[in-house]
Length: 319
Length: 319
Image 1 (tube, each protein chain N blue to C red):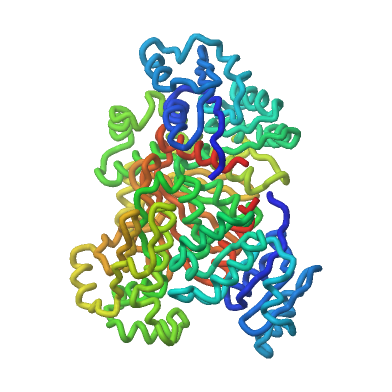
Image 2 (image 1 turned 180 degrees about the vertical axis):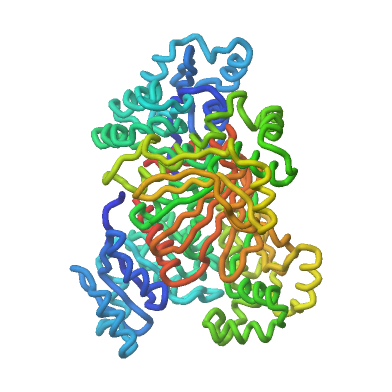
């Protein structure tokens, strides 16, 4: 067991809120908690219950300025603001601020890892702080820590189902024989799909996760960004295609693949009883290894508490 | 990446030999390599290819005494001698010798972890060395490191198929509709089953792995040994039972369960399309967690190279 850490949690959505809520159960103390417009800082330990309550009451986590959280006396910055593309701001600047102060960083935000990996590793090289980002790929599933333990040079490829919303829709289309639009509406009613589902159903979210995997596999040899990914979503998958697949004992899944050569995401035919044919919102990743054969890791790929457990696992792995 | 370590590899069977063979690929140096009757020690790095060649030629890995390997100048002792029960010797004494010298220990030998867990942790508490044993449960599958990252207190139960030989036999019986004795003979011809298969088919091996899981989950609260496990094997499973199961869309697997309350291993009915219904020699473990839902980890549960990759993963995790 590593000693308890002082955490600054930036981002107060489902993930940031759950990290703040669970930190004590993992032996850590939240000394700063911020959303985009407010913050609460307490070197003795933030009353996270009160902050989360205030957030739901008046939309602010406290009376301090968000900037103050970045300057608090923390050991680890937890970056849990929403994923943004291109310059990956404001997340990237939060990470820079922490590393320039020689603090550790644990990311749940995919932007800096998928879009600015070389910049991120460059800042890490110049810092006494380390960067970890298990939560950015596969939610609760320990994918990146497994790749790290195997040593990325011994992993030849990663392939998987990495978007629960798209998988829920395909699973329901196959099970009920109904069309995309109807299942999407159902998924939106259930809160499984966003009002604007493009990020999930067009494959962007799965692609970002594969870009992160490809960056980890390639190490310093090559940098990938979303622009390098060959991406197709599920919006054009007709129910009839799923029926045809079923007649052949197969189904369709949105499968992402990452290697040192690149990233591909798109609908693929997979046997109905294959490991890749996970149902509902579950995720799975298959790692092809040089010495350990194929490893399959599956579980909940999203959810505030599940993703927070990955963040806190990373915090525990820090020296 | 952690710095390369100097390894003393004790045990020159499939696992020890593969650790010696792969160590360099993971950035480590083998400075001592021993089997039960011989050893080779070289602080500059053992010529492992030559030692493995000599082992197959005349049965010895070198001209030194095995004791000399235990006194070599190593950072990590890799204990890969055959699993023994009760006092877990000679493995336990090898581990004690290393910890008393404040060296780290990585075990592939299940005996000391399953039969003498409290003694093992006691020696570790009094040492500057740490003990790791990922390879003792599920071969290449990163089960214990995942439990460690989740924090054992947040894992409520572990359940899985943990013996490839028994699973191969049940898979073949179900697929071919042939009886236990015939499939066992086939498995022995293929080298999947030992000439004396009792350790695998009577559930002892799976039980030892579950005992190790239960010890990790219980921490210092309680110690389990094989005597505490409720164990049934597959020798009495008739082909007709698998036929009946198949008519109901189910199959039979040798399932082990570990909780803080105890250990149970026996044949269980599972749906044919369930994650637990892995086929052939594959293993799977399902972890029930407090905050991350259910995690499924599957892969190759045995094999020299696969198990060696788990050993070397542990070496990499050492500070």
